[in-house]
Length: 498
Image 1 (cartoon, helix red, strand yellow):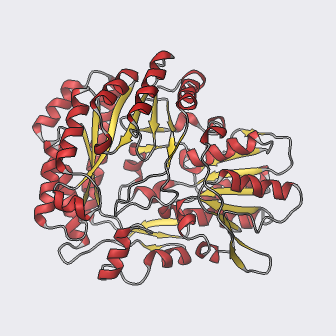
Image 2 (image 1 turned 90 degrees about the vertical axis):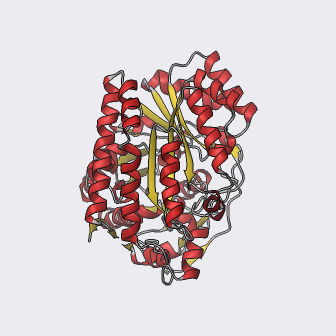
Image 3 (image 1 turned 180 degrees about the vertical axis):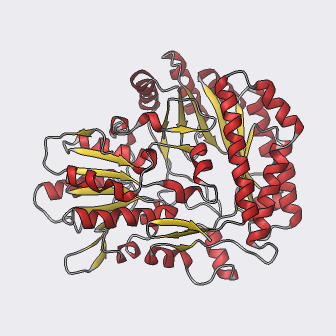
């Protein structure tokens, strides 16, 4: 399970552990979640590569890709005997991260447990109520983790490293000064894919072998439901570095498609044209798919990206009425959505739209309009979600102010190591109502004769047929979970349904 590890010139060994993301995929079953995809951890892979470049021995365990229980990692922990165990944590993964940290504390009690990621950036000190965690990292983690490693390597204490919160000897929890935002992203090496089980990563609608990349950090928009907490300042990797990594993935790993996980890939027309030009100049064959905002779509850009290998574009629509788009602080209109998807279709690019049901102040008319709009846009794929109350969002503040949730449930979740996830229920819609609307949305979109006919007419390969069959599995699981009324319950290290 430990897989490959990379020796270094220094003594301080670091083990990166990726938790199993079943919790992140609820309310889908694990069967459907596996169809949806398993991705390599860019954050852990990048950190591992950065430490290795600086002389530290590193190793990685991906519990999700290996599909194993946390306790099955005990032997690997003992075998590698790391000085530091590093984890990353999204909010829904918090209980799973705690289970790993607890295992580390019981198996190798002298190891330092360091946790970064979005949830730690929101709750850096509150998370340290759990004594199995020693240090939490806030924001970009490369220089922070490197300084922690260097401190230990030289026999110094790591408790006052900038960009962290820590529990000092004696139990005092301290939030240290922030670390300056990193602007030169090119100085970081490519992700340590050699430490990962690359053959196990896959995603419905993505060609295999696949890999993931990011070409920028930060997001300047302030959508009401999004907990993008790292930095409002956009920071870009150079085009030369981006295309060099694509070429490396194609040549070294035989990658056929790259999932670009930038918050918004299509920022800066000249940057995009330069990117497309460089990909074509180097005659790369690897395909890629991107995430974009509809108000950043440009015809010349999409045509250039298509020529360079763009296979599909994913864009958030969220609502079918301009009134709800304004309430969400989305900053777009229906007309912008229609234009963006029309340009993508005409350029021959596969399209996926994302839609949200049940945002505060939504009416029955708004929900039906959202479903109707999804069917009118000519999309190849659509994803529907019930509005989720994430921490550090405007939606969370509104929900607490209006009494849709009581107290501070995400703070309680952090301190308790899990709990019943807060569900949005308004004066208009109960949680059960919204599950039914979600089922209706999927059925309305995917059971249209015109869509089925179009998909069958475009199915020219075994891979495309597999995509359709996988989509059918996911669709059936969504329907089943909605009918059964499953509500996820997450506790420290386990997930069940009640």
